[in-house]
Length: 351
Image (tube, rainbow, N blue to C red; front, side, top):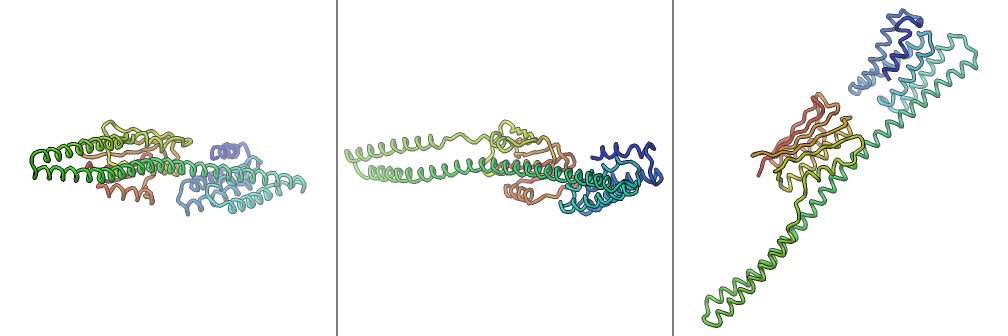
């Protein structure tokens, strides 16, 4: 948009078109216009509103004082820009005021009422079309971001649910082992204790009974262990599932060889990946994010970075604060850095 405004204003800036005020003053107002819109794009909330208001007022001054119709495109730019700064009703108010500026500009040219009405109506329709199309575009972008965030949460929930199902199965088998082995060990102990206090054939019979119980116990333990030997979840595959299918964002996961983590640490790493990817989708305007997990003699390290906007002084939200608390409960730490893209580094000590 700013590139378009420079092209539109070039004839007046370089003396090709006339202005009703001195050209240096007109150029100064144009600089104020551009600075106001830039402030509206990147400043904090209050400064954004003030910057945008200055940009709109400067656009009116430029339109009224320039003796060329092409500069009216600046008003269309301000109407489109309103979507990123103010609510829709305020954007419609800007369109109405812009239309008044158009009417003032052409009234000075002594146009016939019909031609004046057609010109003003044309620019009104162009502004409305630009405003609503930009609103639709921004709304679609927000919906995509929300959909991507929901997708990340769903994938993370699926990974955690799978792990929860494995945990429940292990708990059930452990109970079965306790009940089964406890009963059979009790019977084995009784047979051996009886054999100690009797002689001859009777003792032999109790020893044979103990041998039978021991063999049955061994068979049952082997059967249960075979059922318990489910393959351990692949951490890299689980984290890749979280980042799959997000439009416009490439998520690369690299889990170093030899990384072995407990169930609680694995859950923390899944949540960390979910939070980082979600924040990237919502705030970073990034194209790619890299997640790396490594392990040394003391720590398992989680490191994530993106190629987005970053933040000079990042303020952790509820998600990052909760993530910090999760890693602190495991005896670890979490750090964030927004100086070059956005980076999250967490460390968990080995048990």
